[in-house]
Image (cartoon, rainbow, N blue to C red; front, side, top):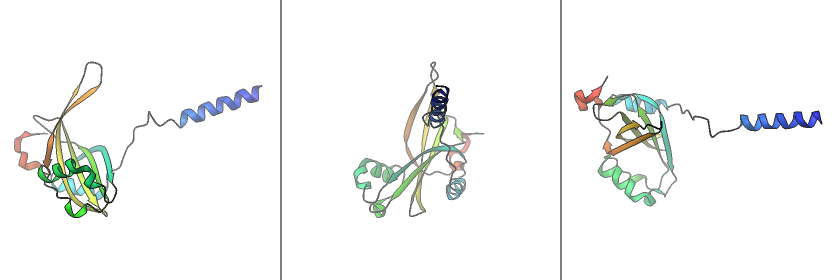
Length: 152
C-alpha cells in the first residue's frame, strides 16, 4: 500500500513538473535581428512573437501583405512562393505618446527582407490585466527621425 502511494506521489510530482501553461517562453534574439534593429537605433527589450508563413501561403493573407506594402513599405511580391518568417520584438524605447513599440523583422531563406514598427499604448487596468491600444503599421524608421519624441 505504501509503495502504491509513493508511486502515485511521484507521478503527481512529475506531471506537475511538466506543466507548460505557467511557463514564460523566453526567446533569444538572433544576432542578425539585433544588428538590424540597432542599425535603425532601436534596442530589443524582449521577444514578442514569431509567425511562419509556409511557402505559397502568403496569398491567403492578402490584407496583411497589402498592409506590409502600403504601410510598412515591405513588398513581399517576390516571396509569395517562399517561406517567410515574421518575428516581433518589444523594443526598449518609448515615445511621449506610445509606451510600447514593437519592431517586426521579416526574413526568408535566413535573409532579412524588411521590417516595420507598430507603436502601441499599453495600459494596466484596475484588475491587473493590460490593454493595448494598437496603432497602424509604420515603415522601419530610424529612431533619430522621431526626434525629441523618444524618451530616455
